[in-house]
Length: 420
Image 1 (cartoon, rainbow, N blue to C red):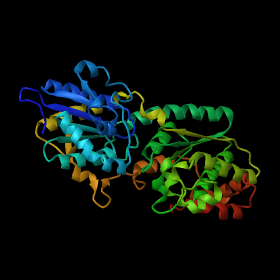
Image 2 (image 1 turned 135 degrees about the horizontal axis):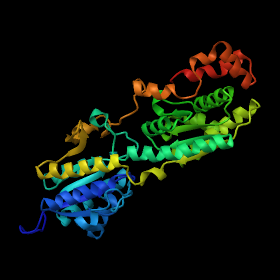
Image 3 (image 1 turned 60 degrees about the horizontal axis):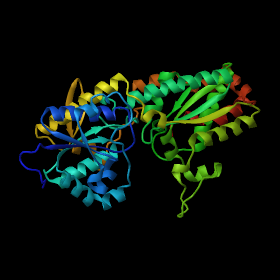
Image 4 (image 1 turned 90 degrees about the horizontal axis):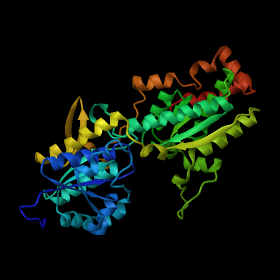
């Protein structure tokens, strides 16, 4: 129970979880302004859910003057953090006790899968003492929102990413070399594909095109090798490949260990976070090309952190203002246990239960639909080995670049056309 008297205003709390994404400050601003205009007080919890483990010292009172000009700024004035599920479970009672001692009546959470899990957990444990609403953020765009609408932060991240890739494409052209660029997208390839298509990158590779199950590292390397050879056959000695980081999670790790000296933990398991996708592919592709007498400079680069705290573009500024306003309106109308979305021009609430995969207990993941026409368009504008490249004069042309017979080239590379 809160220790507030009846004369004191009800309290709205705001908390941010997970990684940064453009638009967080806009949510904070919209929630604060509308809540105060509706007669409530607002506090921000600094440092994410970890901030609740340390008691009231991480509480920041928020006024309209504090937030009126932050809506178009990147980052988060409340900061953010991640925590392991085990740690959150161990300290959950402390978290709930802190929320109740602060006197929070309404809680707005801002985040992705892990934050939704915490919001759902808090809402259940509070037993109507705290009303909870969630706003979905991730630059990965992998939350399954109705109508296919993007998560906030994605459009800005893609926009900023395209600007970086545009510059790298020009650098590649100027210096006559290739870039292998890895970008964020642990569970889905929306960001890599969106950046690659909008910037006109030579090729973009995403986890979804390889189906389910284990993926051969050599196959991914050979797809890139084939793209380089095809570009050389067109008189182009440069190019840019965009790689979604989630590809590395699909690798057959035992095969990978034969190609790369990877670290193992105390159980003898390969440390997946230590896998440097771009660097490994650069080394393997470089050696493959060298064995064919082809000299191509390849540079590996990661693009990710540059995108997360960028100032939001107008699309995301407007989007998050809608979400923040909708979150307060929903809570003050008696709502709880839902995610706020923007769909077909309206602000709507979707119950947590509809957003969770009951098989895994986690948020439903939206992957790139490789059977959709939108993926077909992106795929058509890539330069990579296709079925027609293994026939007639085109096959002879490619084989000549690789210093192979047509038969040997076909036997060596045709397998990359399969999606498994």
